[in-house]
Length: 316
Ligand SMILES: Nc1ncnc2c1ncn2[C@@H]1O[C@H](COP(=O)(O)OP(=O)(O)OP(=O)(O)O)[C@@H](O)[C@H]1O
Image (cartoon, rainbow, N blue to C red; front, side, top):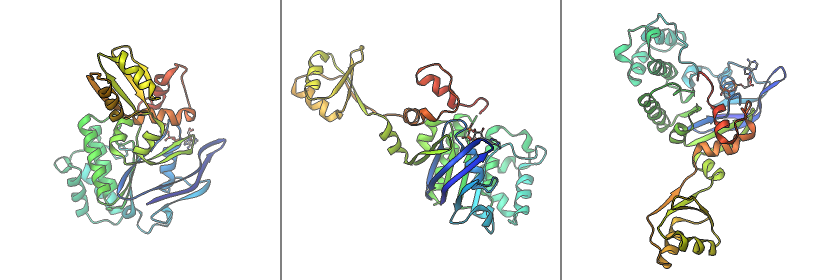
């Protein structure tokens, strides 16, 4: 478990992390989300003892990182996949990491196998594709067989196969009972990967809880109805107090009613339906809704499109 209490980090005038409290539970993947500059990387660095909090604390299994006896056996992290000597082979890189942390060499071969790099273990890491580099970074994080894992943007720049592999792998680690915290700007991917979310903006906590709750709380569930008899159905729905929006293409979007209710009303009025489909809000819509005011830089394009552009950092 990771537990942050009143965590704060100031760099001069900038408050990067502001009185942030949250917990990350074992046995599930927790997504760490926030607009650019929200303080995610700074928080991860503080969890890993790479940066000292100005105030507050963050504990891993009840202890600050610096008090862990054998840190690599407690927590593993992938912060920067390219953090590897380019002329070293994958195996040599991991052996160096293992030796400097008192871990046995046989563990290197185990983690290479786990991430599927055994066949290329002797190739120089500098020539690796991004996907292979991410796997090597993950192998490094797993060396000490830690119960807590942190991944900063692990799917950035990966192809769909690489993204799927990382998703399954992280979910497998969580299913083993590990605590897995992962930051990402790919919200559709996070919606599939993370059961829980910690969402921050301008260094402050915006939301913590299950991904499903986060989406349901901040988006509206509607039902799309297609029928050749909208003129008959519309007044019947309004009569029941539901909100109806005419979409202009032979469909209605109904708020406040379940598809069962709409189906019953249609049947009672002898209205033929060609489509009746519940529309769920997306993580992206929920994120826009809840983090709108916390965006550090915003172009004035209007609408959510302009805001969305700011969430995808250049080069990330
Ligand atoms: N070493 C530093 N010195 C000064 N300011 C810093 C430093 N590190 C981070 N900051 C500032 O702290 C704030 C939070 O940055 P951080 O990199 O933690 O955000 P982030 O959520 O990881 O952003 P991104 O999604 O763009 O990676 C930003 O305003 C950033 O400019």
